[in-house]
Image (tube, rainbow, N blue to C red; front, top):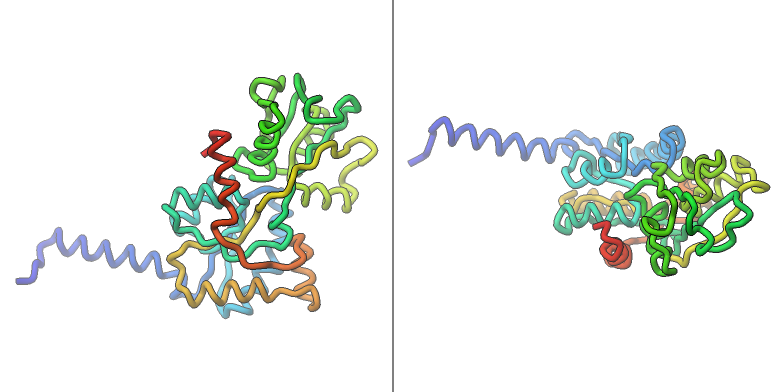
Length: 287
C-alpha cells in the first residue's frame, strides 16, 4: 500500500527540493568560487577575474566569484556547499575538513605552497630576534590565517615565547596587508605575515624598506590550496584539476594568471600534506 498522507508527501517534496538545491548549480552550468579574505577586497577581485574567465572557457560553464567577509565564512560556505571551489590557507582547509567530517578534497596548490614561509617584520631597531619581542605589541593577521597567525604562533612557542604571556599586547589585523599597515603606522612594534604578500608589497614599492624590515623568517611548511567538497561530481573535479594544472607561463593567459596568483605553476595536492598544520593547530589549542 502506498502512503499518500500529507506528512509523507511533504517529506518527499522536501527531500526532492534538497537534492535539487545541492545539484542545481552543476545542472545549470554554474561553478561558484570564493577565497579566504587574506588581502583587501580589491586585490582579491583583481587576482580572481582572469582566472574566472579562464575557468569558464576550460569548463564550458559559468563561473561566479563571490567574496566572503571573513575566513570562517569561507569555511562554512564550502562545508555547507554554498560554493563549489575555495582558495584556502592550510589552516582553513584543516578547519573545513574537520567541520565536514573529512569531506574536503584539496585539488591543487602552488608549487610555492610546498615550502611556504612567514615573516616577522618591524620598524623598531631594537628588535633583532624573536626574543626581543617580549614586552612589545605584535599583530597577527586573521585568527584563522595559517601564515599570518597559526604558523608564526607555532614557531614562537617553539622558541619559548608565549604571545599571551610575553607580549604587552596581541592584535589581529584581519589581513596580511593590514598587518604591514599597522606596523608602518606604529600601532604595533612588530607583525607576522605571509612572505608572498610581503614580497609583493616590496616589489610594488608599497613598503618603505628604509623603515620596515624582516627580522625573522620561519622554516617552510605546506600552505594554500584550491579545495572542493568530495560530493562534487568526479568528472567536473577532474576537468577543474586539469584546467588549473594546465596553466603555464609559456602562454600570455597563463603567465598573467600565474603572476596574479604569485605562482610558478600549480601542482597536485592531497589532504595528507596538511597533517602538520593540523598538529600545530591542536598543539596551539586553536582547533
